[in-house]
Length: 294
Image 1 (cartoon, rainbow, N blue to C red):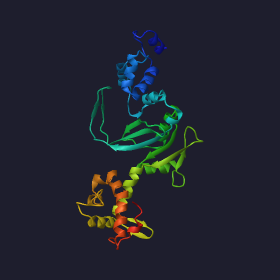
Image 2 (cartoon, one colour):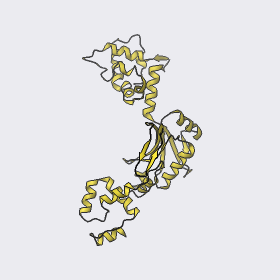
Image 3 (cartoon, helix red, strand yellow):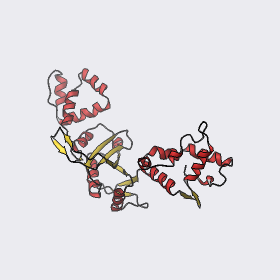
Image 4 (cartoon, rainbow, N blue to C red):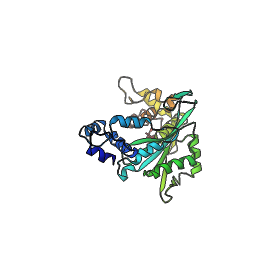
């Protein structure tokens, strides 16, 4: 009705309902310039300032972001594009008091924040839908989030998390194993939700294990000494291992958390360099032929 009134009387001020504003925000999100052009052509949409004022009033308190889910429910997406994956992770934050001017509240210090995000499986979109401070992801909380998302029309096909201690405990509580990598959907029990470990985190764990202990492949122990020997064979001016250095093998502290350093070590470039050096006879005392991890 608000859109019809605006269409009949473009100059008349209209009090927009929340549903119209929520739908208009999804249109604005596709392109600000296009939205402004539609306004100039007298299409019945709220002004940009109206959208901004309404957005400022959204209550983004810790927990499930219900206003966000309401906007998502009104999004003009095909059914296939709404199929999504739920990921969650803990992030370390600075422990300090913080003043929230919008609600005139002081937030207490927290060590970390738990964030849950949806990502389109067939559509290119992502959206945070939950956050809370010093909060562990439990089975009850996970199912509550899943129910809220499913009830707003977004089917969850998978969940993704790293393999930290808390999440391993969650997997155990859910009954997730190598043989049973899925759980029943709490809203639609006949539909499975598959559980995946975060791939970047897995790569980091593999790299750390390789550096600390090495791999046992086909009854051969392959350690970082193999890569170190390869590095010693190349010069700084012309190197077939230009992607890595000794720094990729000697990591301390936060460096062990960097995915980029791990992917460079396990790259195709390093694999080909090992194969080339081994074929030429420079790695005779090393089991280079079994280094299939790169």
